[in-house]
Image 1 (cartoon, rainbow, N blue to C red):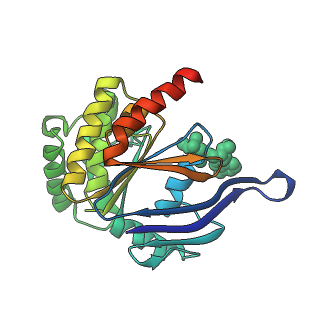
Image 2 (spheres, helix red, strand yellow; image 1 turned 180 degrees about the vertical axis):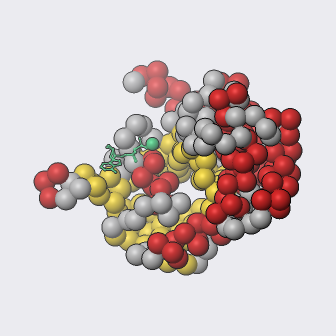
Length: 241
Ligand code: ADP
Ligand code: MG
């Protein structure tokens, strides 16, 4: 579903240039539930933005669903994003002057779906996320967890194949973080590939594959069975650090 070969990315030019990704090789299978971990500034968001076709890469290749993502027209990129991808962010990115239902319905508005139809579908997704009674509420009347559920409902409304989420629990307390991760797990069980970025190892441990980003490359990939061992090791590393 996702395949990156030797992907490089720098910001800036000349002596001011910063080489962030230094040859990323990565494969994510359809139906995967993956977290990308790494310290602050290690390039997690840069990598996720490339996966989400929100940003370009400089070298290497990125195949999404067998299609080479490179120097696409903005129109083509937008089309691929609309067909394939849903986005969730740390800061929710809800529109403050639209209610929960209108926020969820927004992607359908951009697709030209009639108001009646998009509101009906938005209600279905709010219901799925347990938010039906909050449909008419404004974002500032919702808790952090509720806001993120609205954002997740909005990401699902276009029926994406892949959800990419940058620090989806970064602004939430611990118990709400686990609730949001449980929702992402259920979405994954429905067959959607889920890729998250996090720097919290307890959150990463809820996914089925952990990719560690260090010094611009993938330093480690930890799969299902090894998670427990890894968590133990990683806690020790943190103790030492
Ligand atoms: P992470 O998400 O792991 O914290 P980022 O991918 O956001 O890391 O950033 C990696 C590095 O690239 C950081 O040093 C950051 O300052 C830098 N960076 C990120 N975006 C830009 C940009 N648009 N222009 C210049 N530098 C950037
Ligand atoms: Mg980041």
